[in-house]
Image (cartoon, rainbow, N blue to C red; front, side, top):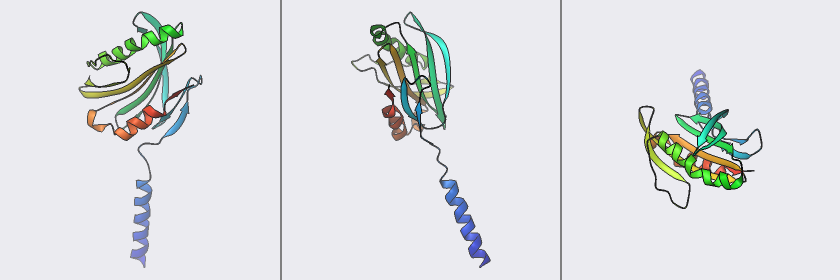
Length: 162
């Protein structure tokens, strides 16, 4: 009987251990209410000034990391809606330049590129959008083989500007 109880206890421990998810998805609304997204872990936020093709703005990045993959939303406000849309290609190019990659410009501002960062190859998957004067970059960055496609797509497709 003692062995049977020990077996049940071991099984319970294993079951509980397998229930602790690496991806702990949570609905997130930005502090200014400008977007909603599902993050795979608790995000942190910071703001810094950047230059997007000659336009100086404060960009706020909200990001979470899981197993070396970063899920992030960057947002900034341009002087007007037309400038916000016109600045998106510069935002995209700046991210590609950060990893030493390039991608052809097309009708879409989505990107899926491989470059280098932190001593090894990195993959950048992102979407860029504008709503009114606000610009958004929604990106996932990590090692090429370590970015589960279903988690990348869940994050990107959950983004909704408000």
